[in-house]
Length: 156
Image 1 (cartoon, rainbow, N blue to C red):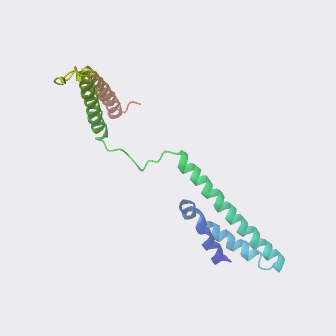
Image 2 (cartoon, rainbow, N blue to C red; image 1 turned 135 degrees about the vertical axis):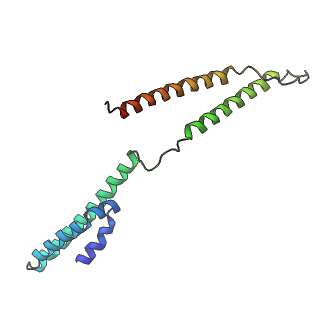
Image 3 (tube, rainbow, N blue to C red; image 1 turned 180 degrees about the vertical axis):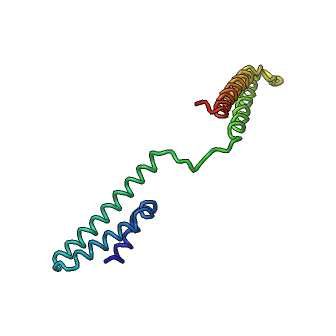
């Protein structure tokens, strides 16, 4: 019975099994030794009760861990430190593409008129966004410097 029980413990999630497998097997061994003097009907009842409890517990733990996994933030993935720089460059590229598209649309003539040269328009959108990023990054750098100085001076 103990061998079958140990094999059925594999139905539990790995983390739960690592933590409780030995303890569960030991408790079952003690209960099995206590029921050794009982009659056959009592032993069958013991096996059914323990087997049903193991299956119900494994199902409950798997369900609990699947819900926990779904609704918790995992720490194993972190963005590289240069991500904000790369994303800013990509955003700037998208903004330049949008401005070029607007310049093309502005230079397309009406039906029957010849197509003239495409002049790039003003870059007010690009300048505004770059200016905003510079201000935001400067404020972030200032805040980081203050927190770093507080940590170095052990002020909480």
